[in-house]
Image 1 (cartoon, protein in one colour):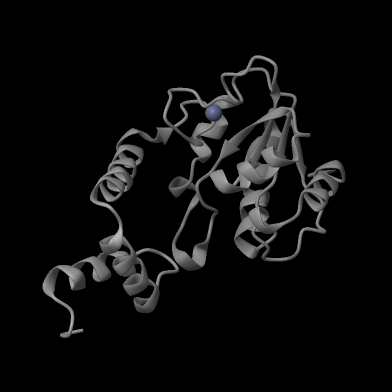
Image 2 (image 1 turned 90 degrees about the vertical axis):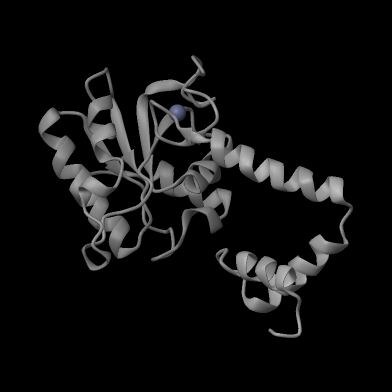
Amino acid sequence: MDYYSNQIRKLIDELSRLPGIGTKSAARLAFHLIHMPVPDVKRLAGTMVEARENVRYCKECCTLTDQDLCPICANADRDHKTIMVVENTRDLAAYEKTGKYEGVYHVLHGAISPMLGIGPGDIKLKELIARLEKEVDEVIVATNSSLEGETTAMYISKLIKPTGIKVSRIASGVPVGGDLEYIDEVTLLRALDGRTEL
Ligand code: ZN
């Protein structure tokens, strides 16, 4: 890319490190940014830095939030005795979009994957177990139907069963290996309603 000046090349390099952005898209974005008014670029950069600095884990459910407690955990009208376990914040958003789930969530930030060397200690499982000290009626495991998601579901079930708390798994019907966030709301609700005890 010698035909680009240093600063343009640097910008393209940085942008192409983002997921899903190849060199071509990075160049297109870079030239778009260069043609934007300076105040707009500053606002965009500022928003990115602010989000990165202020977003943290909710101290209850571990979702990403800019408060101590996320809006769902802070909402007294939610059913705090039903916890749905999801792999990431985008999966939580997928269930929230249905508007039909009244419980709270627990976000693992990943799934157990022996192949990738991701063990139980690498995801937010300790935090889930700590929550079971409070009054909990049911833990709904809504990890993906991938091998990793199923492994994680089995692990959670083994961990929770001895406590006597009900553990259930969302129905399959969610396509195998499917990311929850790409599944339509009707399918998500069907999976939730058809959940079975583990
Ligand atoms: Zn929360």
